[in-house]
Length: 224
Length: 224
DNA sequence: GACATTTTAAAACGGCAGTTTTAAAATGCT
DNA sequence: AGCATTTTAAAACTGCCGTTTTAAAATGTC
Image (tube, rainbow over the protein chains, first blue to last red):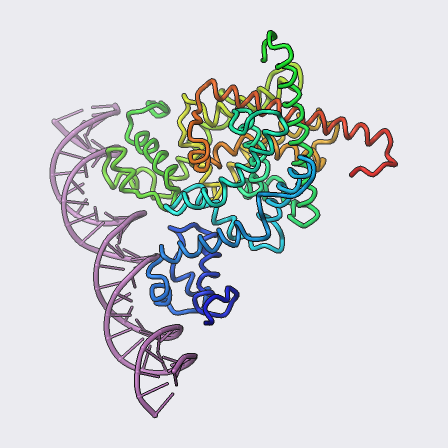
């Protein structure tokens, strides 16, 4: 009956937590089972006893991270907000907060970064459960603002632009450390970045929407 | 005297080429010396004979990639163009072409992706020689458009936004494969993406510039 | 208290992979 | 031709690391 307390203490939980950090640092392949055990303060045999093998442990860690980083109550792609602009801002801030928030552990994002560069077989599931819903939400939002369908090329490109702006703080991490070392991800900064991305993107979307309107009115002129 | 023909043939060159591909696929750690030798069609001992050890080879590959991917004549952060908009478009297209162009080998970018996630000691040099000049060029350009200094926070955020839009096609590679599988990086598509990013960003920059102007005129009103 | 489950300890197994070695053959240079 | 350099071949060395094993101790659980 004392099985589902996801907090601390239990040997399995200590291993999961340690594994999360170690896997996130170096990726699956380079991570050493002995390091994980040392960090968790458990015996070397414990991993095989509880998770079968290293990959079994990794699977658990991934789903643990995807759960703690995904459809949890703290982030939901279906967002409130009356205007489209408010919805965009809510989405952007939510994702930023979710990925870089100070209160949040940084390792799940790092783990994803490794998956992105060198996907394990589990990656497909992660994309479907985590990324696709977000993409779809943003595509629908963008489509509404620029007045095109959700699978229009322009809609997709705009969606790419928005996600690119958000995720570069994860992917460009090591570059930022060197080219903008003063940057810290405080709560203030997160709001500042969210404001910026919203301003930047919404102005762009409105512009693209207007251009599309104008092109519809006098379709004889060259679009380019 | 027959030392500096950077083309093909020579054993060292064949090793470098093969190593580029293998390192780019799996990253430094996971890459196997035996695979590289097999691919290059050379003896196992050849790597140690010519490059000392695996890391020595990697260093050569990196500088080879950075050279073939950096300040070569085909891409230069100091770009032509009369208007700021033309300069932006030239920069964006140049970098896109440089990173994703069909005529270009894809492995240097993949290699960089690995470095970004798990930097080797060589990474600092790469950042200084490749990334910083580009950053500076864009910062200067952005600063001019929005009417702020090059090290202003708004300028930096805008620069992040622009690079985020360009690099997501590399970092989001595996996600794109799954969420937008039809996308191909033909010459046409590259132009389309360059047009999009330029439109998107320039509209945003102008908007931010205007907002800044307005804020300067009546500074009593809250900026937010 | 009896019992199953969990955890520890230390050692060893087994395979993978970077490196080295040795000897021979090929190649290039003057 | 003679010599140094390069390349090959196959085998062995070496360390790392995931995994297993064995036996003992700790921790529940009824």
